[in-house]
Image 1 (cartoon, rainbow, N blue to C red):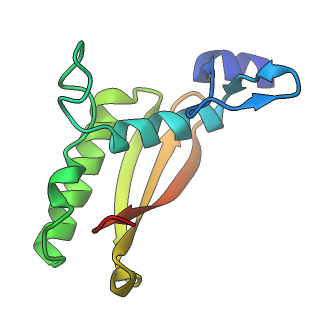
Image 2 (image 1 turned 90 degrees about the horizontal axis):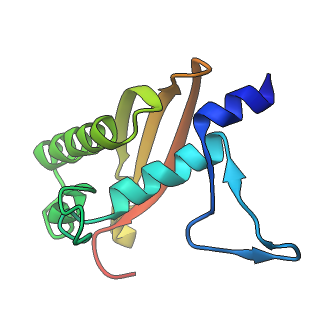
Length: 132
């Protein structure tokens, strides 16, 4: 069952590439989906010449003053980008934790359900409002 699940969820190389004792080790399953979501969110639209629409617009909010409206717009952008580019997940939700704003960052929690397994998953990553 696990092998069939991983076939649907995908297999590929990690980003950034990491060399192990056996060379470049591929990743699969849920970790591949997490990395895909991370790449979608961290890629600025227009950054990829052959696919300029790929990515998200969350970078447009880096210098915005944090407030309820900006949090709502940022969450909406995150959900729309993942819905558009990551078809292995559904029921995507985003939540902003701004408790670390004094450190110049917010924490973005993205939760979703993996379609193939109907299993919930999430990831949390820091979004720096200034250069770290």
